[in-house]
Amino acid sequence: MAKPTKYAGLICTIMTLIAFIGIIIGILISKPIIIAACLFPAVVYEVYRTEGDSTRWASWILLIAIILEIIFIIFNISFDLGKFIGESEKIVAGYSVPLGDIKIVGPALMAVLSIILFARTRGRYTKWLAVIIFITCFAIVYSLSPDIFSNLLKIGVDEGLSRLN
Image (cartoon, rainbow, N blue to C red; front, side, top):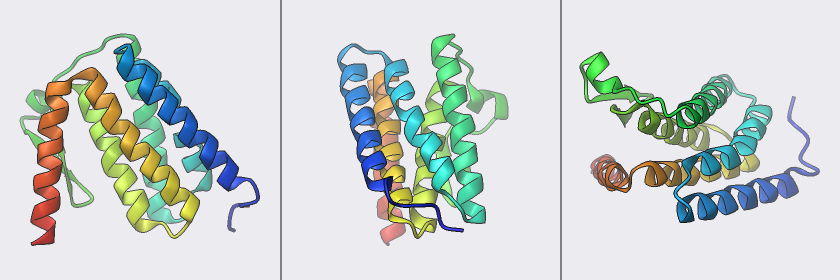
């Protein structure tokens, strides 16, 4: 059954403002936890809004990922997932997710999941939330490590260009 949309536009607007304010403050004072915490409400609302099988699992994994990301940031947990697995990247639903420090892998995974949600959902509010999540994940990575951010951005551009060809 479709979720009610009476207040969905207002709620998505509020989620956008919260994420935007979190991005600005988090980057200005170099606190990725603020960005992640301000993303959390949008992820929770995304979980509520999704209804299809593939979008439902993507939104639940997204929720788990943001909770873990917040924990990793708060407790400053660093773990090189790429070295542990022995690979530099993993393919998730046809998209390449670079592996490395777990705090960077989380937002990269969440960005991929938001792309899946955007591509596979029909709901405009779910798409709206997916865009908020996607942009905010890049801000989290930038706040954690501007150098890694530029590398991920290059990988993303290369991946996008290769899909166009």
